[in-house]
Amino acid sequence: MKKLNIINILVLLFLAITTGCTKDDIIFDSELPRFELRPGYQLLEVIVPQGTNPTDKIYIVGEFNGGMDAVGDPRWQLEKAPDTDVKWGVYLNPNDFVDGKTLADGYTFVSVEQGEERSLDNTAVIHRQAPAVGGRLNVIVYRWADYFTKPANPDEIVHDGYAIYVVDNTGWDELAMYAWGDAEAFGGWPGIKPTGKVQINGVNYKYFDTGAANEGLNLNLIFNNNGNNKQLPDFNVTLDQDYYLELTSDGVTPFDPNAIVTHDGYTIYVVDRTGWDALYLYMWGDVNDLNGGWPGMAPTGRQTINGVTYTYFDLGAANCDQGMEEHLILNNGNGKQVDDVVVFALDRDVYLELTASGATEIDPDNYTPGTIVTPDPDPDPNEGEEYKIYIDNRTGWDNFYVYAYGDKEIFGKWPGASSVEIVEVDGVKNLVFTVRGNGETENLIFNDGAGTQYDAMTITLDKNYFIVANPTEAVFQ
View 1 (cartoon, one colour):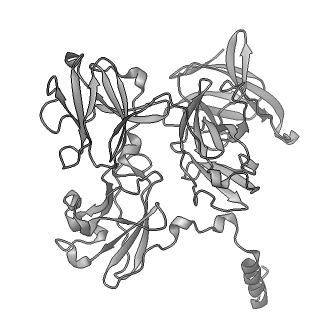
View 2 (cartoon, one colour):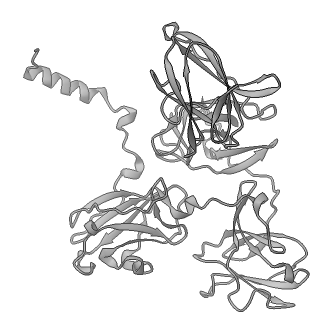
């Protein structure tokens, strides 16, 4: 066995130092210390999810401070770092802990606006790590409970009477609606809380059902913070139609649900077919961390163009037409990414169809989802003959993936591949998957990338296949 002497070791260390940092070595901006240490205190620096409102109130709760009773106590409230919205901190004095408990007994975080901390699979999170007294510790909050309460589908809602839809930009912890005029239609002060939440054309609303029995009444609406000493000026309505309103801390104004979206600079529009539970845009190049450190910026919003709904990212007018060359990485913030989806000078709008395996630029004026063909780049002839798998997808799933295990993972890691090629066979549109093989055996699993799946069938890579994918089983055509 060859042995390294001390000179060899020193040379290797020198090479490691002079090689410089790779992308994997980057320390993200959110991980840097943002708060000064204090003697006698334990400092937790908390990285919060993208989209956390900088005016939110966040508390640490656990056995050491009485659990949920700690919400509202300033000793346990986090403060936002002055130079970033993603890093918050809290100083804990062990002398304030109760019943001999410590952080090791478990703690979690609560957002007043978005609920309790949740894991990526929507389960409760209990942390037990603790810094030394006088030290600091980074803690990551991946999700708030509200993330998993998806806005309702407006087509599935049955309203009781006309609805009042509000875009709530008050920043209040709670919202209620009181009415007076022809009647005190929604009961005594402070009135009723929102009936629910709904997303319409990419805009998130809270809505109040006004009740069929109240149709035709002339009312003065008073929006308030559920009776906690804040209210907006009266807004008069007649309940003979739905209303769309925007609320700020200063007042109530009509809101146009069909208003043209005004973008900040050029925009990246994405048809998201990944099945990921989140989407972020990271940029690096002439300027690293442009619009935020890893995983980058959250979507600016959603917009429907020519019947196609896009998730979009506004790049910022200050960044555009500056001649900067930027690499764009779309990712889920949790280990999945598509690198260099486009490299450009931020000098135009870009429209993309994104799958878990890649991105393709599209023409928004001539685009039908699923019709983009991605060629197999430079196939290796040693991988065998080329075969096609045609799938008549009748599952009704939002996304459709094929995963394979057996002699080799022909569709990559879970959840596998999502076809971007459609071919019509005998009048039926089929998803087409191109594979190569030399007679290997593969077990196929059909899934939606979000938890729904079933074992489909076993195939041998020696011919083309025609398959019907039903919601719970698959059969050969």
